[in-house]
Every structure is written in structure tokens, then in C-alpha cells.
Length: 204
Image (cartoon, rainbow, N blue to C red):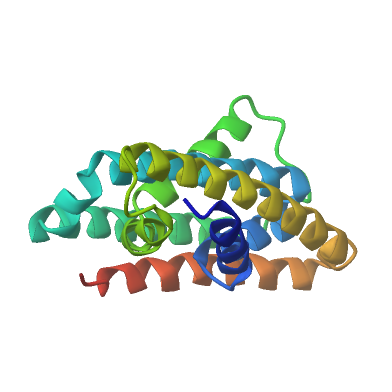
């Protein structure tokens, strides 16, 4: 198992512009660093399901079942479009902190988990990326896949948290402007819509 090579590639891939990093940035800009970090933890927790699926071979079942894969991608697309509509409805909110309503942090964390679990692109990525770093002579390839999944999740949490802190720091003053805040909330909605619609066209 090439851990050093895996971590190097994982860090570069995590830093590349993609849905997860866009979600973390928009959450951090519109609702502050705490929201961004909680959301990032949710996204990374969702990776546990994909890691377990790859380790146990369940990912290959989904990959080779057009019906199951279609159900997953349409559920993911519908959920993201729903979030886009919800975000657009609340576009005039101008808050740099999470509301003090009970359970709001858990809801944000849960949203991150669901978004990652329902994203078929993550499934395809894990299937294509992880096996490259498993030793061909491994006696327990499932165990090595599990370790790689946990390492990927750990580095992703660190990177996403740092990005959340940076995004919040750079945008805090700008978000005090009502017009800029409105634009950012609209952009957040568009991010959900565009990525949600793009999932519909994912094929294996």
C-alpha cells in the first residue's frame, strides 16, 4: 500500500475545484466559518459510507446495476435541486453566523452527509482511484481500502476546514454589504442547481 503516494494524490485532488470545495466555500462565505467547518465534517462523514461500500464490494454492485445507479443519481440530483430552491427562497438573509435555533448545526451536518452519500460521482471516483494504491499481493485488500478511505477523509477534513477559515476571513467584510450578500446567496443557489442537474447526466 503506497500511503505517501496516495496522500499526495489525495491532497491535490481535494484542492482541485469541485462540488465539495464549492459547497464548503459558499457555506463559509454566506454563514461563516463555523457553518463551513460543520458542513465540511458532514461531507467527510459521508465518505465513510463510500469507503465501506468500496471495501465490501457494494460499490461494484451499484456500478454494475443501471437501475440502482440511476436511483442513486436521481435522488442526489433531486436533493441538490431542492437545496437550490430552498437557498433561493432565503436569498435575502444576511447572516454571518448560524441561527441560534435548536438543531441547526445537526441539520447542516446531516445535509453534508446526505449530499456526499447521494453523489454518484464520489462512488465512481472511489472505484477508480483507490484500487490503484492497493498492493497487488495484499492478503486483505478490503482492509487496505478501508485505511485509504480513512486517510482520504482525514486529509479532506483538514483541507476543507482551512478553506472554510480562509473563505470566511476574506469575505466577512464584503458580506456586510447587502448587495454582495444577496449575490452570494444567489450564487449558492446556482451552485446547487448546476451540480444537481449535472448529476442527471452522469453515466457509468
